[in-house]
Amino acid sequence: MAGQEQSTMQVNIVASDRPVWSGTARSVTIPASEGGMGILPDHEPVLTVIREGTVTVTEAEGTQHAFQVNDGFIAFDSNKLTVAVERGSQVDEGQHE
Image 1 (spheres, rainbow, N blue to C red):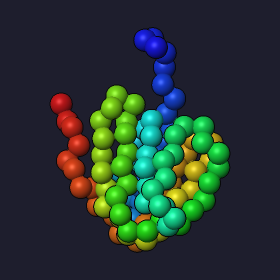
Image 2: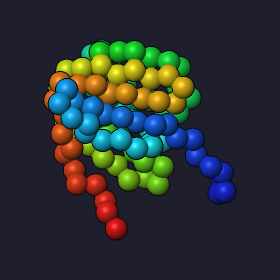
Image 3: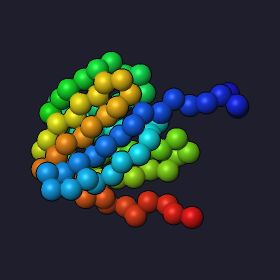
């Protein structure tokens, strides 16, 4: 509905040697060890292993960012998602105005 605010969550993607991306998002998809997994605001707390693949972050206004990651884990609680990986890099440049 128009005028309705959309819930968001804080997202931090970190590699072992540096931060990769930080911001707010309305959804994130991750390459969980058992298959693709989507995380939305107010998701139940979760801690899971991820495998090599692509993490996709969708910001509140719809801008998407893709990150190539290797093995690691994610932790989600209280609308804060941490993606911790050995190596990670942004695949796209993002949209800048």
